[in-house]
Length: 213
Ligand SMILES: *Cc1c(COP(=O)(O)O)cnc(C)c1O
Image 1 (cartoon, rainbow, N blue to C red):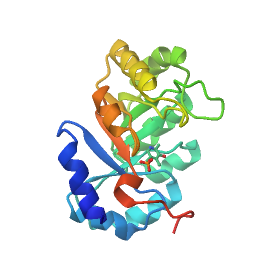
Image 2: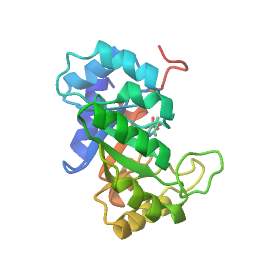
Image 3: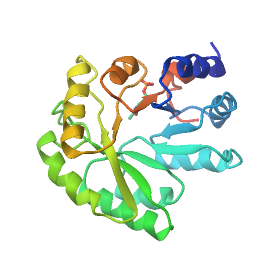
């Protein structure tokens, strides 16, 4: 199926209240343009330099909203300031403070998700679930940043549903609005568990090229 057909098929199945983020990492700018032409407006990228090249090439697409979904180094925040609407993988105070500072200086507010490592994976980003309440309270006070919800990437070899449930319980306890969870293989289960943002790559764009173009 074409990118446009994939977008249309997904949109037909995803409730209107759920934001479909098309994750376009390693895909060429023309693939994003095709999805945009089919009505897709929210796009997610993982690498700051790659994102910037595409954002510059696509600056004529006036309604495009960028989401940064990858793990983010503090020294890359400056590149994103004022041009990215959402950052999905905020997992430490230092990063949240830098986002608030740089977006605030650009006269903008970035909407942020606190990433929670519900799987306890050593090598993955995300704060520990026990840390989340205190961290969320600190982050919520930062000007230039609006903490909107929680995000999770479940361990790939596990059933994602218990991780989605844990994230939702935590979100409810913290009184936040949004849940960023679900990818190509599990977005339907994520929506059934309350996702309000799903991040879908290969089900829209097909397999990823090995290297960034
Ligand atoms: C790549 C990526 C996705 C999309 O993954 P697919 O399996 O291709 O849908 C979603 N979220 C994050 C954080 C990603 O890095």
